[in-house]
Length: 103
Image (cartoon, rainbow, N blue to C red; front, side, top):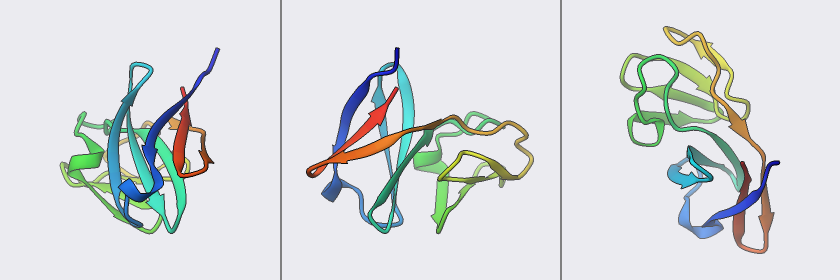
């Protein structure tokens, strides 16, 4: 059964930036898009690069700098290969200034 976890404070992630969190056994990249928060798997499905460290976020597009795979950070969908598998996405919500992720 999924559980909600508090993973960060709103002020810990600047708009347009990513933060790695590990919760419920999952390594997650948490993204801030102008105050809207999204959570996806932190590992690129092509070559297992850490997206929070090796990725570049521009709008909703997250590019893995290892080999150029591109994903939609709001859904985890592959936008450009070489990756063919989507990233797992996680539900997020805010409670006050806390960011919660459902895992």
